[in-house]
Length: 180
Image 1 (tube, rainbow, N blue to C red):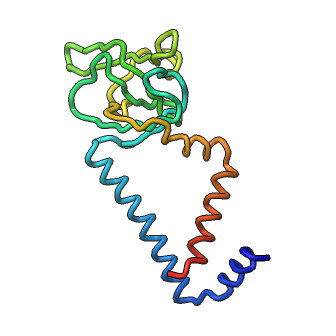
Image 2: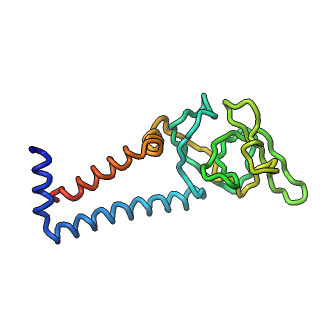
Image 3: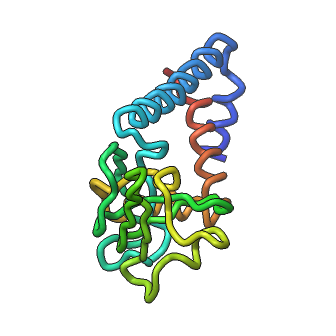
């Protein structure tokens, strides 16, 4: 039995006080992660300050699996900027470059048209039916930095859920059987 036997014996020997201590430690880790996420939201002004590139539509600039850091300021969006946007009726945000900007004279609001660097045409086919431009409320943020390939962890766990469950189970087992 070896390692499995030792793990089972370790689980059997856990005292209630030790179990509560471990549960509280795990809760503090999760709470800390949520606080950091909310702080990033406040600092960056973006509802999602970190996103993973899920497709190859922005190659060669950004590859699938790159992590982008976003910032949303009050400045109007300009042509050439890379933005992350949500389209009505779609759950997953899209990372593309602004190719055209339409400024309304009466209000000063800016509408934008986007395109993936690796795509043939603009994104009007991706927008909601009848929508020709993105408005400010669609844009989640501008890309201000990136980490190459680090997002592959997220992609793998999304595409192969069994890996996610194995990882969560292993981490849970580690927390339960740790002595400290």
